[in-house]
Length: 187
Image 1 (tube, one colour):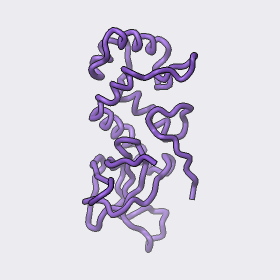
Image 2 (tube, helix red, strand yellow):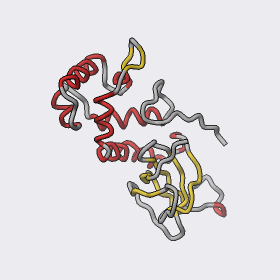
Image 3 (cartoon, helix red, strand yellow):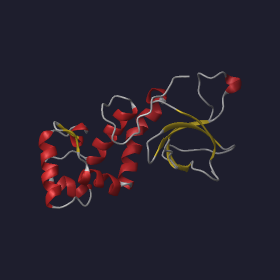
């Protein structure tokens, strides 16, 4: 299974979850991975405080802020705060990794003879698909600004990519382009 090395904090619960009995509560953070968009709960090191948006290393080797990863979680298990922060933090990740995502627009292909992967993105229909394909044939897009300048009425690429990733995390997508599809069993 592919694993994220860095995550971003969506919510930090220093007193633990309210549904856990008081004597079993411990600090917990809900996070999203930067590479594979894994949703995880992790236990911070003792006396460590985390802030929403913090970037934390969880890969192999020494972890300065994380004691251990508790478990992989489903979108539905996120706290209301984590759900609210998810789109904002995904947009930040997408902006930082703009080169990877612009490469997606420059190289993405078809799913079938009747459906292109671009059309699985929110607010991208056949007209936008045709415009993107025509423009990238002339010259590959340099960045999101270039994409928006050359494709008429193109929605904000960061927003549509974040929305697509959230749909995939919710298991509401028929096609998974960014999040590895994982069938999770409820404990």
